[in-house]
Length: 190
Image (cartoon, rainbow, N blue to C red; front, side):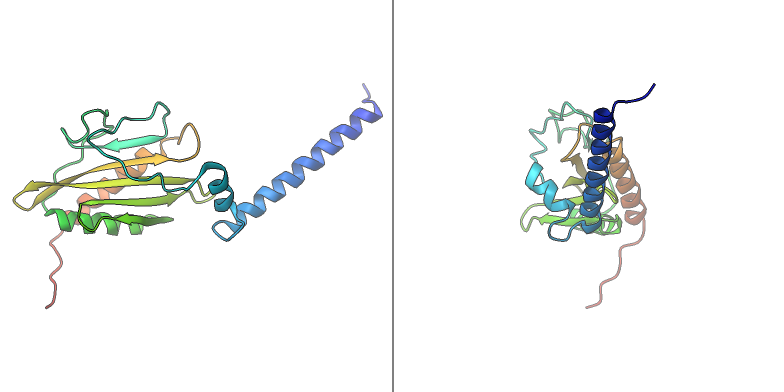
């Protein structure tokens, strides 16, 4: 079966257009965070990558599977948590510093907000190849007597599913936070 000349030309044109689009998208990915890169395109289409603060007391989960929540009992009464974080044997200010350390160890993760008066911080993580942004909200919860816990909410800006990335991030962070919290506190010189 032979294709007609107009159909062959149309198919060639479509193939050429696909190649040009793929090369253009590849260039955007290659430029990444540079001006005119994929991050600028995402921001112009989807808005600012940092999804902003959350109030854990009134938080409700998304209907799409592209978020994850670790929350102590009573802190997130309107949201079903994926996991309950442990109580760590460190005071709140130390736990907050540990979270910042763990976030800095995570590739492509940067702080976007650090509260001066509260115990809430926010981080922006980007996937390595496609540079999709995820916002991670953290609230430290004191438990008295040099102990504390936290609420972590990680959510994607783009897509209907995150293929478990946000949940894996929270699990990884909680494990690493626990490892650091179990170590003796560093001695400050002064």
